[in-house]
View 1 (cartoon, rainbow, N blue to C red):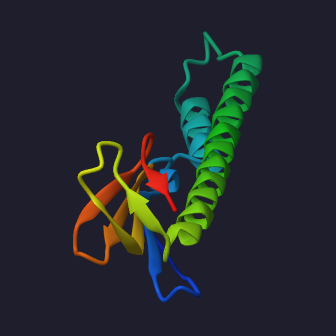
View 2 (cartoon, rainbow, N blue to C red):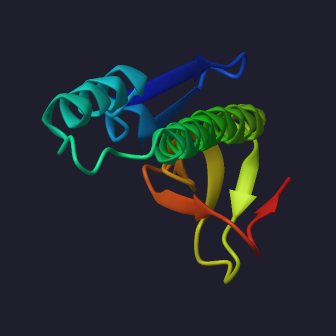
View 3 (cartoon, rainbow, N blue to C red):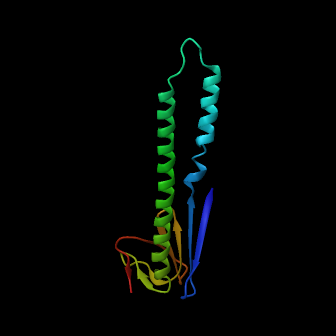
Length: 135
C-alpha cells in the first residue's frame, strides 16, 4: 500500500510524501492464530495432547509482535509528519548545494522515503542533506 501526503505552504509551494505502509505486510492477527489453534486441537493425537501453556505463550508472543508492528507504524507516521513540517518551512527559501554548483529558490519539496528532494525555480533538483545551506 502506498501513501501520499501533500501540504500546501503560504509561499505558493507544495510538499509531498510517499511511503509504504507496514500494515500491508502484517496480515496475521489474533483471529488467524485462534483458527490455527482450533485446527491443532481438533487434529491432535489423543495419546499425546498438546500443552495449553505453550499455546498461551505463542499467543502472547504473537500479540507482542503485533504491538511492535503498530508501534513502528506510529513512529514512521510521526517521522513523516516531522519531515513534512521541516520541508514546508524550506519552500520559498534560497538554497545552495554543498559544493556550490546548484543554487536557487525552492518551489517544491518531495519526501521519498527518508530523502527530501527540493525542486528549484530553475527546474533543477537538489537533495536536501548535510552541507546544503539555506538563506
